[in-house]
Image (cartoon, rainbow, N blue to C red; front, side, top):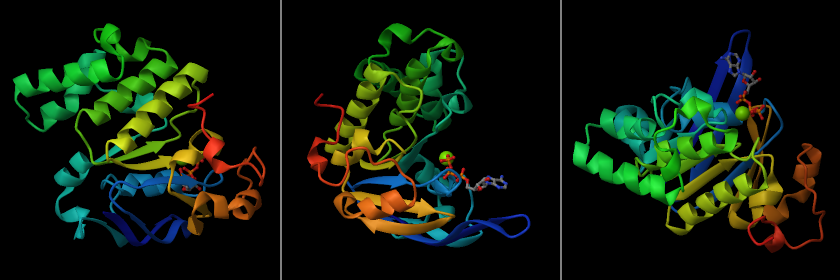
Length: 248
Ligand SMILES: Nc1ncnc2c1ncn2[C@@H]1O[C@H](COP(=O)(O)OP(=O)(O)OP(=O)(O)O)[C@@H](O)[C@H]1O
Ligand SMILES: [Mg+2]
C-alpha cells in the first residue's frame, strides 16, 4: 500500500502547490487523478517515489517512510512522465531500457533477458537499435514505458500518457495499462482523457489548487467533474462500463 499523509509543498511567496494531501493507494487498485492545469497533479506524482522530498507530511510504502529507503521506493514505484524526452538517457532504445537495471547492478545476463522480454511485450523489438530521440511521439512513449516496466515496479504512475497519440497509439498504451492492472500492479493514472480509461479504474480523485477536492467511485463524481471543468463527454446517463476505447 502506498500512502500520502499530510503532504504539503510551498514555493516562493507562499505559493502553496500542495496542501495537506491525504490519499492511500491499496495494492492492485487503479486510481485516476484528474484536475485543472496547475492543480498539483505532477507535483504530487514527483513525491510518490521520492524524486521530491516532502517539505511537510510523508509518503509511506508498506507503512514505512520512503525517505528511509529511496532505492526501494524508486524500484517499486515507477514514474512515466508526460514528456518522454525528459526521461530518455540511452543512445538506443535497448540501452535506454537497460539503463535502470544497470544502475541497480543486475547481472548482464538477467538484464539482457529482461530487456528482450519487455521489447517483445511492448512490440518494440524492431526499434531496439534506433536512437530514442528519432522515434515518433507514440513510439517514444512506449519506449519510456518499457524503460520503467523493465524494473518490474509494483506501482506504476503515468502522467498524461495519451497526449499526442493517435488512435492506435492510445489503444496500445491503454491496453498496456489495463494488462498491467490485470496482472496485479497498482495503477495511478493522471489524465484529462477520462473517457478513455474511466471504465477501468476503481477510484477517481479530483485535485484543484493543490488540494483533493473530491474522491470516490467515478460514477458518483459527475457534478464535481463539471464544477472543475473536466470534460465529461458522455453526460450523466451513459453507463460507465462503456467508457473505454478498447472495445470500439
Ligand atoms: N519549481 C517550481 N517553482 C514554482 N512553482 C512551481 C514549480 N513547479 C511547479 N510549480 C507550480 O505548481 C503548481 C502545480 O503544478 P503541477 O505541474 O503539479 O500542475 P498539474 O496539475 O500537473 O498541471 P497540468 O495539468 O498542466 O500538467 C503550478 O502552479 C506550477 O506553476
Ligand atoms: Mg502535470
